[in-house]
Image: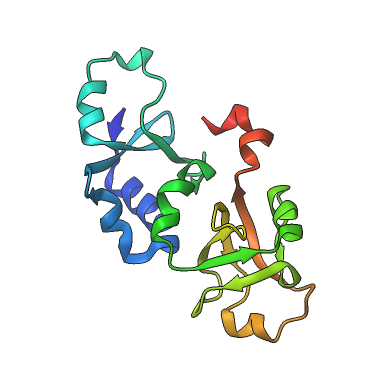
Length: 180
């Protein structure tokens, strides 16, 4: 594992910033210690510095992963956030949406969110802003990009797409071989 370059850091923090805004600082300097991002084989990991020091004793060839996989870089150099980062970014999310049980299942199958399936929506959500998707029990189930702002959603037709799907916890079953 190696530290991220400046360009890689900008790409990772830029993507995370879409979901949590200025709370990125809280992601690195937490109450339980300092955390950092490391990269190995195009995968970006979020790891405690305490664990990082211990992991340095393991040879690189034998080290598969450590910490939480936040996402990966594509072959074109773009960073793609993965569902494995959901538990870390959900507490700091600026924009949230809660789904009805019928829409929750459709979202977990990889479909976009329609206005008819929305139970609640955060105020001041902007168009194309990163948004965390919750079920009615306040459990984060995925994330996406807002297709409409809060104001546009109020007057929208029930069959209008309000959130474009990016990742959901159903990927743990559908794509388990490619997540890590």
